[in-house]
Image (cartoon, rainbow, N blue to C red; front, side, top):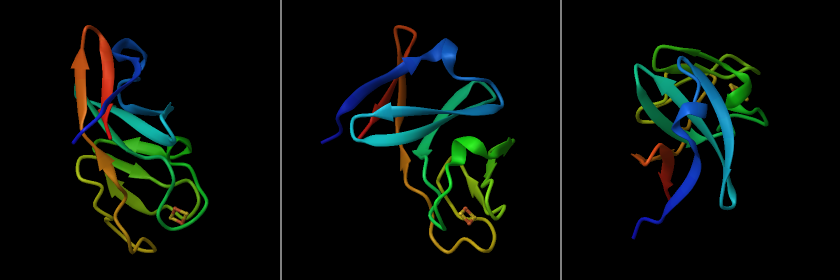
Length: 102
Ligand code: FES
Protein backbone atom coordinates (compact mmCIF):
# COMPACT_ATOMS: atom_id res chain seq x y z
CA UNK A 1 0.00 0.00 0.00
CA UNK A 2 1.03 3.57 -0.60
CA UNK A 3 2.02 5.69 2.36
CA UNK A 4 1.47 9.38 1.73
CA UNK A 5 4.14 11.41 3.44
CA UNK A 6 3.91 15.16 3.83
CA UNK A 7 6.92 16.74 2.13
CA UNK A 8 6.71 20.49 1.70
CA UNK A 9 4.29 23.35 1.15
CA UNK A 10 3.07 23.48 -2.44
CA UNK A 11 4.09 27.15 -2.55
CA UNK A 12 7.69 26.14 -1.82
CA UNK A 13 7.98 24.01 -4.96
CA UNK A 14 9.66 26.30 -7.48
CA UNK A 15 8.06 26.62 -10.90
CA UNK A 16 10.37 25.43 -13.71
CA UNK A 17 12.91 24.31 -11.17
CA UNK A 18 13.81 21.52 -8.79
CA UNK A 19 14.15 21.29 -5.01
CA UNK A 20 15.36 18.44 -2.80
CA UNK A 21 13.30 17.27 0.17
CA UNK A 22 13.79 14.55 2.74
CA UNK A 23 10.81 12.18 2.74
CA UNK A 24 11.19 9.47 5.34
CA UNK A 25 14.49 7.75 4.56
CA UNK A 26 14.57 9.03 1.00
CA UNK A 27 15.96 12.15 -0.52
CA UNK A 28 13.50 13.12 -3.21
CA UNK A 29 13.69 15.72 -5.95
CA UNK A 30 10.48 17.67 -6.55
CA UNK A 31 9.94 19.45 -9.84
CA UNK A 32 7.44 22.18 -10.65
CA UNK A 33 6.42 22.00 -14.30
CA UNK A 34 3.41 23.81 -15.78
CA UNK A 35 1.60 23.87 -12.44
CA UNK A 36 2.20 20.16 -11.81
CA UNK A 37 4.55 18.63 -9.26
CA UNK A 38 6.63 15.54 -10.04
CA UNK A 39 8.86 13.49 -7.73
CA UNK A 40 11.90 11.31 -8.41
CA UNK A 41 14.80 9.97 -6.43
CA UNK A 42 17.30 12.76 -6.04
CA UNK A 43 20.32 10.55 -6.73
CA UNK A 44 21.29 10.03 -10.37
CA UNK A 45 21.26 6.37 -11.46
CA UNK A 46 24.63 6.82 -13.16
CA UNK A 47 26.80 8.18 -10.38
CA UNK A 48 27.06 10.19 -7.25
CA UNK A 49 25.24 13.32 -8.30
CA UNK A 50 22.12 14.99 -7.00
CA UNK A 51 19.50 15.85 -9.56
CA UNK A 52 18.49 18.91 -7.53
CA UNK A 53 21.83 20.39 -8.62
CA UNK A 54 20.95 19.82 -12.28
CA UNK A 55 19.03 21.85 -14.81
CA UNK A 56 15.34 21.47 -15.51
CA UNK A 57 14.13 22.21 -19.04
CA UNK A 58 10.46 21.49 -19.54
CA UNK A 59 9.97 17.94 -18.27
CA UNK A 60 13.67 17.02 -18.56
CA UNK A 61 16.15 17.13 -15.73
CA UNK A 62 19.79 17.17 -16.75
CA UNK A 63 22.26 15.63 -14.34
CA UNK A 64 24.97 18.10 -13.33
CA UNK A 65 27.79 15.55 -13.56
CA UNK A 66 27.66 13.99 -17.06
CA UNK A 67 24.57 15.70 -18.51
CA UNK A 68 22.41 12.57 -18.59
CA UNK A 69 18.74 13.51 -18.91
CA UNK A 70 15.62 11.98 -17.35
CA UNK A 71 11.96 12.66 -18.02
CA UNK A 72 10.62 13.70 -14.60
CA UNK A 73 7.13 12.36 -15.43
CA UNK A 74 8.12 8.69 -15.69
CA UNK A 75 11.81 8.65 -14.76
CA UNK A 76 12.83 7.46 -18.20
CA UNK A 77 16.53 7.78 -19.03
CA UNK A 78 16.64 9.79 -22.25
CA UNK A 79 20.28 9.65 -23.31
CA UNK A 80 23.70 8.24 -22.58
CA UNK A 81 25.56 7.79 -20.34
CA UNK A 82 22.39 6.80 -18.45
CA UNK A 83 21.42 3.16 -18.57
CA UNK A 84 18.87 3.00 -15.76
CA UNK A 85 15.68 4.94 -15.26
CA UNK A 86 15.30 6.88 -12.05
CA UNK A 87 12.52 5.95 -9.60
CA UNK A 88 9.45 8.18 -9.59
CA UNK A 89 6.83 8.66 -6.88
CA UNK A 90 3.19 9.69 -7.02
CA UNK A 91 2.38 13.18 -5.77
CA UNK A 92 -0.81 14.48 -4.19
CA UNK A 93 -1.58 18.10 -3.29
CA UNK A 94 -3.86 18.56 -0.31
CA UNK A 95 -4.53 21.63 1.83
CA UNK A 96 -1.62 23.41 0.20
CA UNK A 97 0.82 20.64 1.07
CA UNK A 98 2.66 18.23 -1.20
CA UNK A 99 2.38 14.55 -0.25
CA UNK A 100 4.67 11.95 -1.78
CA UNK A 101 3.50 8.34 -2.05
CA UNK A 102 6.09 5.81 -0.95
FE1 FES B 1 24.38 11.58 -13.62
FE2 FES B 1 26.64 10.58 -14.64
S1 FES B 1 26.14 10.91 -12.57
S2 FES B 1 24.89 11.34 -15.70
